[in-house]
Each structure stands twice: as C-alpha cells, then as structure tokens.
Length: 383
Image 1: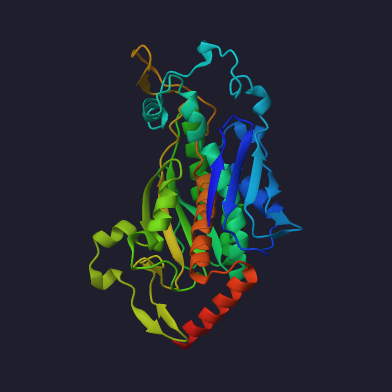
Image 2: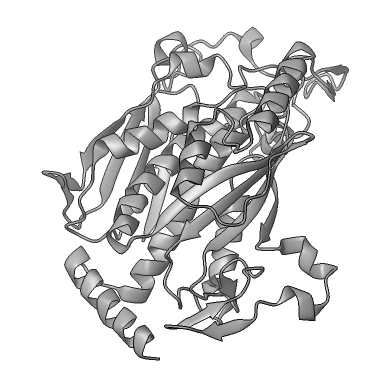
C-alpha cells in the first residue's frame, strides 16, 4: 500500500490517492472528519483554525460505504482560497513583487528550499513545507485506522511534556485513561500539569514565542511478527521512525525506553519473557518491537517536537536578494501545536501498521485478509 498527496497551504485544496487498499473495508467518512477535527484542536492553535473546518470529499475508491479495491482519492478544500487566489494563482498573471517573501525563517525549510529549487520567492517553498500538508496524512491514517479496527488494533497519543512541564506517567493505561486524555485540550492526564502548561503557552504568546514538547504514541493489540529482521528496510521500528521523522518539526524519536537503554545495564533494561497462555514480557522497555519485528506487546514510541519556527517576534535572518540582515518573515501560525502533532502521529502510525498488516496477511479483500489473519493467530496460539 502506498499514497501520494499534493496541495499547498493556501492553494485550492489538498488531495491524496491511496493505492493497494483491500476491497470491502467499511469506511465511515465522519470518522475521517473527526480525525481532521482533532488535528485542528488544542490549546495554543492559531487563527487559521477559526477559518478552516476541514471536511473530506471522497472522489473515488469508495462506494456505498465500502472500499472497492481501486485507488481511493480524497480531497480537502481550503476555505481561505478566495483570499489567496491571486497570490496563489496557477495562471500566468501579474504578480506584485512586493508580495514576494524574501526573509527565510531560522528552523524552517525556507532557505535550503529556495537554494535547492532555484526560487526567488520563499512562498514557493513554504506553501508545501507547511504543516497544512499533514491534513492529507491525517486523512490517509484515518482510513487506515478503519482497516485496523477490523483486527482490534487501537492507537492513542498523549503529550508527555510541553515546554518545561511534564505530565504524570501512568504505566497501566486503560480506557478511562485515554478518555481523559481525549477530553483534555492539551492531551494531558494531570489537570495540574495542564493548568501549568496553559499558563506557559499564554506567557509564550505574549512574548511572541513558541513551544515544543514530547508526544508518546501507544498502539494496542498488534500481532507478533509484523516487520522482519532479514532486511534493513523491512524493520517495523525503522519504518515508524522514518515516517514519524518526516513529520514537520519532529527532531527526535525513540522506541520504548529509548535513550535510557544506553545508560542502563542489560540486566535491568531487557524485557524478561514468561509463558502464561502464550508468550509475554514482564516489562516493555523494547516498546513492543525486537529485531525489527512486533513482539506482541503494546508498541510505544516517543517523538520530540521542536517549537514552531514562525515567531511573532522574529529572529534575525538575511534577505535572499540584498543579503542584508533583517527580521525573519511572519506567517499565520500557532504558539503550540504539540497535541495536534500527536493526532497526526497516530494517523501516520496507523498507515505504517496497516501497511505492515497488508504485507503480512495479503489479500485483495478484507475477507481474504481476515481469514489469513485468523489462521495465523491460531498458529501463534499453538506455539
């Protein structure tokens, strides 16, 4: 399975095509729209969230509520297009040079992009580099989640820390825990931590600054054996790392105990194996993946999200024409989008896991795939 997307932040809209998705999977469009809505929420989001209310349009590949085996085409309109159609026109019309962006933002794709693609207007880079692109990745993941639902696989995210504030760590995360996380504006469990974080976001907004944080994603009920140890590009943790690291602003990734494993003796960090109605591990420091393969435990990873590079009190930069030192450009932006990044990560992970499930169990229809899965799970139980 694969997908391809296109679209600019202030263009007409964003679209994507998913190829290789099994037939007969029930797809609820409202569940896709719910994921898109979650992506737009969270304390610290900017004014654009008041303009756009994303909704998916199914263009192809789904009929009467089920996939039909052909490529799935999805489209999201940019409602602010009317205000940008002259500045973002695809036609060869007059363009006021005064509207060109010349001041690259430190920490953004602006400068390397204009050099790589030989551009003299940074807008030609920033429009696609914008996190608006994650709308399509969220939509694709929302479709993948509905495939995973057939197999009982569920994915959740939480904000482990934001700025200098850490949320409490809960080892056993049940349904009530994740319900509380979903109800939080900051995807945090501890009300006191959320209160402190909101105050920190308010202070950063007043100062024209931005904040980053750490997101933790948990994936439940993944069968043992997804991925492979035999080739580097088939390792499940490597696939997750690549796709999560491709998300805008992500600068760090760790599976399970991650960097703690580098400073802890092997006798205290490796997960002891026990057998009670099947193989289990006493702990989950490996994060549910060993040797590039899922080991039957909850898959868990964390990702570090840097502060957004668009600052209302900009850093210094260099004009790409005059080479003079000036303030970096300003675009509509957020003070903090860490909870939203968690929603996107859930859906990125959903696509990776769904793809691994398709690779493992095959089948052109969900019925064939489910039969293969059931046969495999019966074999696992007998081991």
